[in-house]
Image (cartoon, rainbow, N blue to C red; front, top):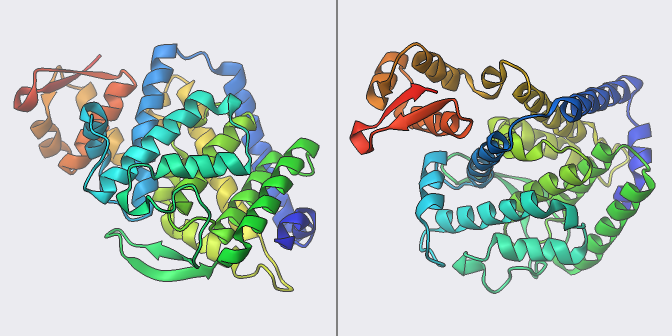
Length: 357
């Protein structure tokens, strides 16, 4: 774990051009952060609806990155009607745990301080519905693991890098957490650089037998919130990673494979991490402008929104037919537009229609 204590050295080893790009990205992110602080006057109900939408989107994206198959629409239905404590389907178990943990972070981040106990507690909460994990939840790994890349079918398609041996994991995590706490307090570098360094080291250790990727994204939300990026609950960090999953894996591999060598290079990972935070920050500021809807919708989602805008009402079948967009995407978009109070639904089931508010 000696590398984590050499963040300043890692930065100094980068080329002047790389350092300039990193500092420029940080400056832009913090400029956007300032714009949010100065202009965030959205109605609490809208913020609440946005947060609810992000809970669904982030849960879906983070679990799909690891191979789960539930769509946002599936998760929306699950969260509305679920009442039992155990599930037979692994995807459903993982979704329920992630959703509840993310709610906890969004609601209580001010009182959640990074430490060894918190990380273990988060892991226990993340996997509390997963039957097969009952014997190791909340405990560091007792056997070796590897970081693998998953395809859309949930199958492993390759090993990204080896991880810290199980017998060294408790020591490695203690050092990582203590370093991060101290670095943030003493401000040895910008918080984004410290957070980015924590994340890549956490993934390098891979301290638990399962759930490390999902837990790293939960911790990302927490650390960014505690660093003052208050818009985190309103734009999904996880969705941006899902949309850039090949680049995510590539950045991890490029940096991790150099650690412990004479040519360590943290730039690929830091550049990716900062780019995702930049996109998140840009979208957040878009929420407080007049055209905020256009800035938080994808191309297909925007086509659905434009179609509805020009009609007095429309059933889902008509929207699918006239836009040529898959029905599942249309359904997800309609849920999102309802959450941000741009459309309303009337009628039920097959008779349901949608119109602009």
